[in-house]
Image (cartoon, rainbow, N blue to C red):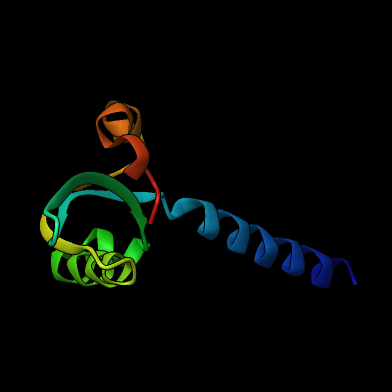
Length: 98
C-alpha cells in the first residue's frame, strides 16, 4: 500500500513539473490590412511547439491574424515571458490580442 502511494505521488509530481517546465512562448510581428491600408505591430502567445520551429510559429500567427482579416508581413522574433514587458507599450491594443 505504501509503495503504491509513493509511486502515485512520484507520477503526480512528474506531471506537475512537466507542465510547469513548458515555458510561455511569444512572438512579435507586423501585419497589414488593405482598403484602407492599416499596419500594426503586435505580440501574441504561441504554442510551445512553435517556439522551436519558425515555420510553425509563422503558420500559427498567420492563421489567427487571417481570422480577423489581417495579413502577416513579418515575424520579428520569438521570445519568452522575460521579453513581454519591453514590447507591451509598442504593441498597444495589439498586445496579446490574438
